[in-house]
Length: 318
Picture 1 (cartoon, rainbow, N blue to C red):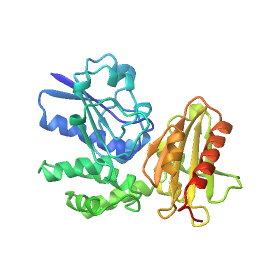
Picture 2: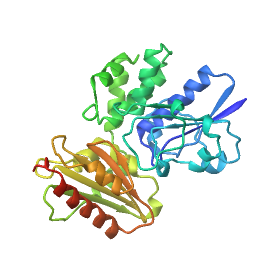
Picture 3: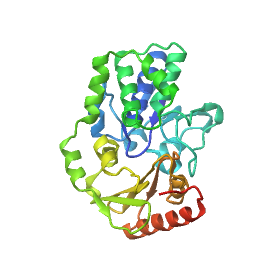
């Protein structure tokens, strides 16, 4: 039997987890001659999902001969969890499902093997749409996970949704009580989330239109970035009319993960700033990343790029 590895990005969020979990189930159900191997970081977020499958570490995966490889919810070289695993599979046998905008260093995957929709709210939306449009059976567990991934990546349908998003969501075979359960699951704070929420500080910078927040933790804190997807975190670091651009710096040891947001009518191009911070994403929500760096250098880079961009952007308004 041939084997297909399934990867997503580092510090995986619910859209990533739900999309790889769904693809694992689809392959098991429809391809009798292919065995899926889920090579994904372990995460407390999996407890919010249904029908949890076993994740395999990169070290364990290196012992397995993979014939194919599928990457979900990421198209950026530095962000893939298990890039060495991907490189071990022939290029023609690599596949991609993703919804992100332009990225810094894209993965080497043939165009014909890519299912990308930059207008989709999430990777789960892309998968759900494909299943609905092609009349592929969607079990209750799959429907729940897809709904949870879309719900999470849109912050309860408040960001990035389109008419197509809502059409897809409405067609998922999920009872109202199950939808309500997914909402409740996202809203509930774990003890770890409550602790980290209390540790967020605002960086005092006297810059017009920009708010910077920080959460700096020792390296042994492990994977905490999915926590900032929670609605409570979103509210705490959200842009405002007074500060239409917000930047959230999450430091774990000497690695820094940056979340940029802006109000939709703010003309400043935060995507360009994110690219200068080794990242990419969407026009109103994007991210950057710094490995083996210092907080001072990260902060200086963000401020300098913001000031350059603000001067160049005529539509910028406060």
